[in-house]
Image (cartoon, rainbow, N blue to C red; front, side, top):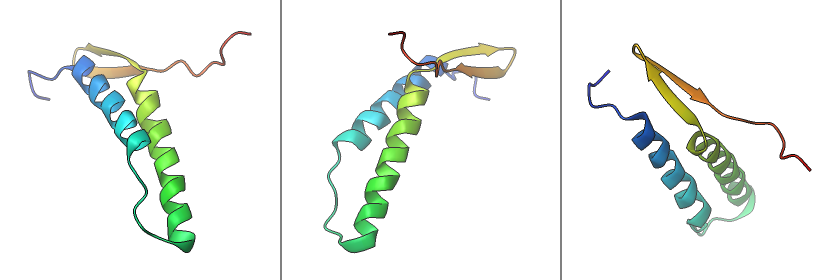
Length: 74
């Protein structure tokens, strides 16, 4: 692991990726390929957004990402 690894910067990169996925356009494709592209974009956004919301800790070379998936209280 590089000595200059910054878990907070990594989390910020995932936030940026989630924003990029959400704002990118759909290429000029048709039919089933179009739906596959849309479905994959939704999965990519969900993954990047979850990691972008993580709390990262790095202790003795072990990176731990904590993500609260509990529903919002109503």
